[in-house]
Every structure is written in C-alpha cells, then in structure tokens.
Image (cartoon, rainbow, N blue to C red; front, side, top):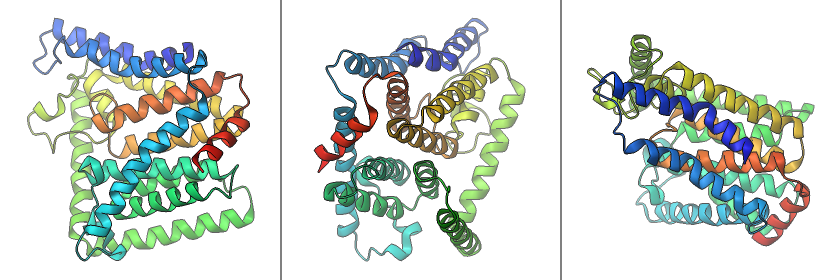
Length: 335
C-alpha cells in the first residue's frame, strides 16, 4: 500500500497542487473544484481497495488475475463475434476493418486484446498445456490484428519482448525477422494507405501543438482536459500520457510520473521471479500504449487499466507469497 501511495503520489500530488494554483490564478481552462476529489478517488480508491483485499487475504493474486482474464475474455469474445458477423471481413484488410468490440472504438479494443494476449502468454509460460489459455491467446491475437491499431501491435510486442527476452541466438533471429517484416509492412502501408499517412501527419501536428502549449506554461499547465479548449488545437487530446501530464499539470507532474514508472520498472526487474516479470510486461505494455494513445488523467479506457496494472505491480513487489505457485494456480483455474 505504501508503494502504491508513493508511486501514485509522485505525480498525483503535483496534479492536484497545480490545479489549485490554476484556480487561484484564474486560468480559464482550470478543472472544476469538484473534479479534483473525484480524480483522486479514481486514481487511489480502486488501487488501494484491491491491495487491501490482497493483503488481508480476502482476495488472492491468482484469483485477481483470473477475474481480470475473465473480464478481458468477454471483450475477446465480443470482438470475435463482431469479426465473424462483419460482411466481407478479411484478415488482409486489417487497417480498414477496425473491429470495435464492446468499447465501440478500435484502439481501446486493440489495447484490451494486447493485454489479454500478454497475460495469457505469461501464464502459459508455467502451464503450457492449458487449452483455455491457448484459446484465449489466439482470440486475443486475432483481436489485436482486426482492430487495425498499430499502437496495439506495438503494445503487444513490448509485453512479449519482456516476457520472452532475446537472450538466445534463436530468439534474436526471430525478433530481427519480426522487426524487418514490420518495417516492410509499415513502409508499404505508409506509401499506399492515405488514411495511415494522414494519421501520421496528424500526430506530428498534435505533438507540435502540445509542445508549444507546454512551452507557454511549463510549470503551471493549462488544466486537466484543457487541450480541446485551447485555440488552434488539433483533434481532442494529445494522445500521449506524458505530453498530456505536462500540458495539463506542468513539468513537475511529468517528472513525477517518469520517476514513479522508473521506480516500478527497476524494482520489478530486480525481483525477477515469474509474477514480477509478468507484472513488468503488463506495466511496460501499458506505458507503450499510453505513450502512443492515451491519458492517465481523463481517458476512461486507459485510467482503469493503469490503476489496476500499477496496483498489482506494487502488490507483487511486496507480496510474501510464492509467486510461481500463484501463477500456476491461476493457469490451472483458467483451464
């Protein structure tokens, strides 16, 4: 619990302080006072609640991961049904297919499927004969592809690279082949897909605009959710959790978030046991997803994912229970 409070407080306290200063200085885009306690409860309440349940023994790590897998499997099934019932659906036209799933948005659906695949693959590492996990893994991989989200593919790659690092010559060759193939596909699509080229151009404009807003108010920021109210804004959000934090709440909030993430990553990496490695894979995947698409502060799809992943990571760091056995029980229960 102390680890979770420390890591979340590193960036949440600057966010709340700058929001208060924005009100005091009369910043027009400052968030409403009523939004601040709601934000604090959303970022702390669920995470602390899960950790309390785990520490008191009312919830075990493997049952928490099972519940997460069950929730994600509902999204996987919905996406699969969506794909099957889509007229003329084909795996070849993945960029134009854009399956939405239950979230009615292909990018969050792709994120959920990437996390499902990473969690399933991590559990299969200890229980490779579990048919249910293999089925869910295949469905999740199909969901990542049919979402048409390049960010979901990169999120999946980051998590799998952490789970299965290139420590042998065979893995290195596999990773090099995958990078080369991805590069060729990206190059061909960039030159032939007008929508993808437009998306890339738009993202560059978003980054340039956001950096300019940060330059104008580096310490105070403009307020949570202020991006879409700023003159000359591009689309409705920065689509990057780091830039969004700095633009909304100043560079101190950004520094706190980077430090918090660095602490969790380094400590999980040093622990090295299977549960810590799986938690690290989920955390790194979430970092990649947030960097490419989402905001911690006001993204309804990503905020809950971030709280859940960081809470489980903090508990994994300090748990006295045997992590390997917990993962084994989770895989057995899933099957």
